[in-house]
Each structure stands twice: as structure tokens, then as C-alpha cells.
Length: 458
Image 1: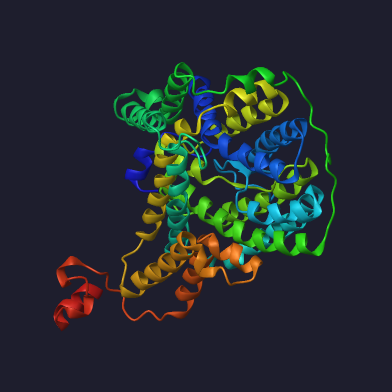
Image 2: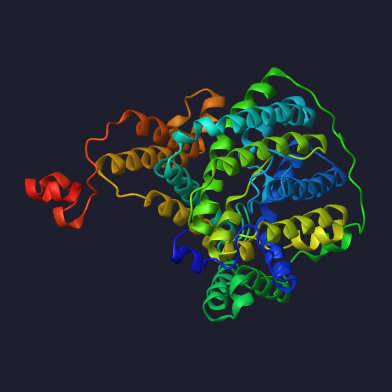
């Protein structure tokens, strides 16, 4: 690890901060991810026409399973788990497959297909020791960059108040988002050690309290929530139609690519180093085991959360024990619906102020990975094609509207086509030169004279 990276890191992976620091830092991770984690079960509940009680149950198990699967990643069991500060939560990637499956076959098909998808991810995870050469820093960096860039519109929509909100982009919502972002910057720049590390938490708390004073927090859902509840396994059963098995398995591969990017971003953004074979393999295996385990509790498939990767990069706190404490909060919320309701009532605009900074930090981690080595024309071309094609499909999904549904869903993510192109082009394009693009030659290494070119490559 470089001296500069080490200086920016407050705690390494196996460091345990004092409890007075660890608890708020762990809670910070929970507040950043909780809205995304509960949004997916709410959407699915609406698709199948679930009752209020069933919707509450789906939210409850989403919190509980997120905590348990996060512990799989941070603490680990044998080959399972990256043993890194990885936060797990319900996956938006699987949602595009889950909605039509739930409409056609019911929730049992979603959970049955997810068990098979988890097995696919586990198999891929065990193979990554041999496949790692497909993901050098250039390729991993492109995947991470696309993840971060792809998340930015979601952060902007949250800052506006959430897609479909009647008061979207109102002065109240924009003011709350701006207040949170400004508070984070002030706390980071001027706060003492703990305040600086927990700047995101400070921003969210300030935004929440101001929103409460403005009447922007739905206190009714807090009042209606029960104090104690124990989830039941297999509440909606399991079924295995072919469409569910195929669709969820294909999406498992796409999700694994995103997880690989998240894992690489955590070690690079938080510790300034590349991920090890053991961490990479264990992380993807845990993703698969977590997805299969989630199905047994009627929770949606799980995956690593990119916004929490941004938290690690922002704070410089790599401690997996901090995230384990956050997992404890999630598990507690899974048994205490009242506590879950307090967290879930956070207005979208408040979360959006933090999300914009966190998602941009993910993109920045991707840039840091790409910059690991000097970039020649070949590397610049790979970046341009992978990023350009991937984002084109993500931003203008009509481009791939004529593809079969299973393929279209993967292309619209932007991550899958960008990652695929980056891997293939990196393998196929020859290394014509190793001369980095520089300002001295106007961006064209070959334009220098022969002497200059020789000196550059020595």
C-alpha cells in the first residue's frame, strides 16, 4: 500500500475502532443503504397485490436478511465471504426479472429461481481464481466507473424527491438535498476525527431533523408499525418454472460482474490496493449464498451495495467490524418493525443529498483503478468503446428494444455490455505500443520524433 493511501485510511480491514466511533460509523452504512433495500420489496408487493401485512413482512425480511448476508461477507464462513467492509442488500438488478415472474407465476417462482441463481453465482465465485486475469485494473476500473456513472441519475432522482413524486424537484426537496450535501462537506472539512469520518451520518441526521420540522416525514407509518415481530421462513413457498430458472440465472451472471466491480472498488478506494484472489472469490461466493439464503426467508436476491462502497472511499474506514455493527442494526430492525419504520421514513430528498456524493465516489474509484498504469491509445480505445456502448444502452434503452427480453434486460443495465466489451477488447486488441497519451504530443504518441518515442518507451 502506498504511503499516501495509508495516510488517507483511518482503519484497515482488521482494525476495530473504539465503540464510540464504530457504532455511529456502522449506523452510517445502514442509513445510506436502507431506502434502496426496502424499496424493492415494496415494488414487488405492489405487483402481486400484497396486503398491508404482507408488504410489512417483505420489508421486515429484507432488513433481516441484509444484515445476515452482510455478516457473511464481513466475518465469513470458510470460503464464503470477502472479509471486507461489504454491505449486502436487495438487488435492483434482479427486479427487472422478478416483476414479470411475480406477475405470471407468483412470488414463489421468484424465490425458487433465486435459489438457482445463487448456485450459479457460487459456481462462478469458485472459478474466479482462474478467471481473475480477465479483470485487470483497466477492465475492473471500467466496470466500476460504469456502475458509478449509472447510479448518478438514481441519486439525482432521489434528490428531487423520488421518481413520480407530486412535488418532484420542489424547492423543499432540492433545499433538503442541498442542505445534506453541504452539511457533509462542512463536517468532512471542519469536523474533528469522528465527525469527519461520520460526515454522511451527520448530513443525514441534520436533513432528517429539518425534514421532520417541515412536516416532510411520514410519521403515520412509524405509529402504525409493530414493536416486535418474528419472520417465518418460506412464507410464500418455492416453485421452479423454466422461465424463472433461466431468467434469474442469466441475471446472476450480470450481478456477479457488478459485485466484482464493487469488491475491486472497495480495496482500491479504501485501501489503495488491488483485491486479492481470496477476497474476490469469497465475495462472489457470498453473494450467491446470500441470494439463495434470502429466498428461504422470502426476501429478494441480495448483492453488494455500491453506495456503501462510496462510503468506504469517502471515510477511509476499511474496518469490516464497523460494517458488521451496521449489520447488527439491520438484524435488530428486522425484529423491531418500529425501528425499521423510523429509518424507512427518511425522505427521498434527504437520502438523495448523500447519494449524489456516494455514487460519484464510486465512479471516482473506477477512475483510480483505470489510472493504475499509463494509458496508451489501445487502452483509451477500450475505455471509449466499452463506456460509450454501455452508457448508450443504459441512457437510451430504446436502442435495444428489439432484442429478446432476457437479452434486453441485461443490455439496459449498461454494466453488462460495458464489462463484456472491456474483457473481450482487452483480450483481443494487440499491444501496439505502451506509450501513454500525453499533452506533449498533443494526445498522439506516434506524432513525436523517433528519438522522443524511443525515450518514452524506455
